[in-house]
Every structure is written in C-alpha cells, then in structure tokens.
Length: 344
Image (cartoon, rainbow, N blue to C red; front, side, top):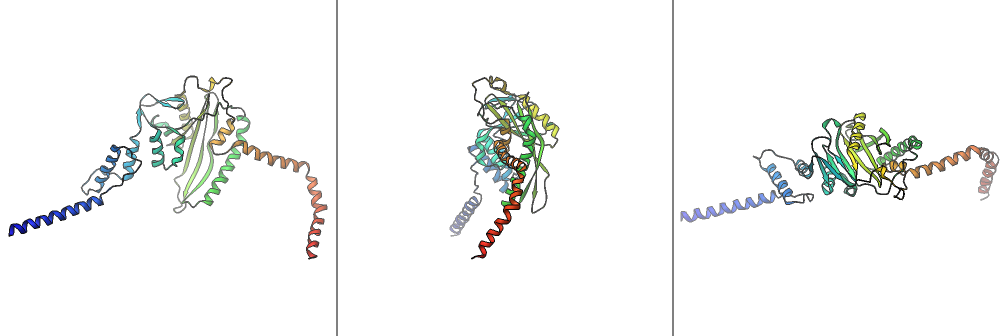
C-alpha cells in the first residue's frame, strides 16, 4: 500500500514539474525580430536573450546590443578596395567593413532610425576605411545619378547668392515644421559649417551644414551636429555620399574628404574628363545639383527672385503713378464707397 502511495505521489510531483516547465517555457517564449532573416541569426538572438533570463547567466547583452552585434556582423571585411556602382575606392588604412544592399539598409533603418523608403538610394556603407585620426566614422555612398554630364558653368557667379537664399529658406522651413509638429526635440539651423566648395580639378563638391537640437522637456542639447555632404562628378552624372563625423574640426574634415576623393577612381572611360560630344547632358547645372542636395530647386528660387526684382524695378521707375493714385484717385474712391453705403 505504501508503495502505491509513493508511486502516486511521484506521479503528482512529475505532473507538477512538467506543468511548471511548460509554463516557464511559455514565459520564456522570445519574439524574434523580422529583420533577422537567417536561421543562424535567429538562433544567436534567441540563445543570447535566454542567457539574460538565466539568473546565473554571465556576459549578458541587452536586446539592442544583440541586434547591433548581429547587424554589424553582416558587413564584409575588405583589405584592398571596395567596388561601387560606377567606380571603386581604395582602403587607406588596414581593412574596412563594407555594408552593401540589404545590409546597408538594415544598418541605417534599425540602428540609425532612418525611413525604410530611403533604402532605394543606398549603395555602400563603409566603416574603418581611414585611420582613427581621420575624424570620420563612416562613409555612405548613394546610388549614382545617371541624368547626364553636369556643367560647372555659373558656379562662381551664383554661389554667394545661393548660400544667402538657401540659408533663409532652410531656416524658415525648419521653423515652420517645428511649429507644426509635436516633437520633443527642437531643431535650429545654424548655417554652413563648411561653405559649399567646388574643386574643379578633382570634380568634387562638398559642404557641411550645422544644426543644434534641444530637448524641450529637459532644456538640454548635445551641442552642434554636422551634416556632411559630398558629390563626385563623372561622365554620366554624379555620385553623392555623406560622411558621419567624429570631430568638429572643419579643416580635418576637409582634408579627409580630399583623401577620400583621391582614393576613388571611376570605371575606365567614365570619369568626368572622358565626356564626349553626343553624351547625355544633365539639364540641371551645378547650381541646381547643389540646391537639390538640400531639397530645393535653384531654378524656382531664381524665378521667384525674378518676379520680386521685376516688381521692385517697376516700382522704382513708376513710383509716381502710385503716388498720383494715392493723392487724386484714393479720396474719390473712398467717398464713392461710403456714400454708396449711406444710401442703403
């Protein structure tokens, strides 16, 4: 009889243990992010996160740290050169990490919070291409523009005016957006940290804009933020790229941009100097390429300025007509309107 009781008691204990085990498994069920595609990545994420749930675990990582580790592992280590859509770039220091295609997209969307719709413009993201003193964390090459050869005509004559007009437009636009959007951050545009610079001998245009972001609730700011943009021109259009800086030393940044441009080479017969008669020519000249990189159309700005200038020229020449109308016609119109009202 005792044996039977012990047997049934053992069965009950086993049932309770199994039930607790199943319940624990349910509690430990981990949701794998969709961005992790391969079985190897999904298993790694699951195993690392289970370590965090183990009270006796060690070397634990947060979910965010695990994702950073996995996504950065998608990059390919390269020691000599990295192939781009319309050229290649040489490694200037040791070995670099290149993120291409979906890996580039996932890096910027998940780790940098960018909009997924921007992925179609991305070519290659490169880290560690320069030494630690370069002041640059990474270079982001975009898909080349293939609208045709871009003329540099008119740059010197228009750039100062363009900077003045674009500074006003960007400030107004940013302020308007800040007033409309409910956001914890307040963004202020501070102008060009590095003025737009076109080096014709190297077929490159670059500049850096400066912003400051302030947390409205905490009334704190991490300081100025630099956005660095550069464009390499070739026979068929241009190759835009952006740099993520680790320094605010403007001279060092300019030196680094020149190093990058010097290490870049177009495909054979596709550099800027290889242009021939009959090649496609971009209807947008250098001024519009510059303005469009900031989200504005230079032709539209000039057109609006033209209307405004024409009005002021007309006013300057024919001001006496307005004065005559104000003195002689104005009072008659005033009397006519109010007399007509008084008749009702």
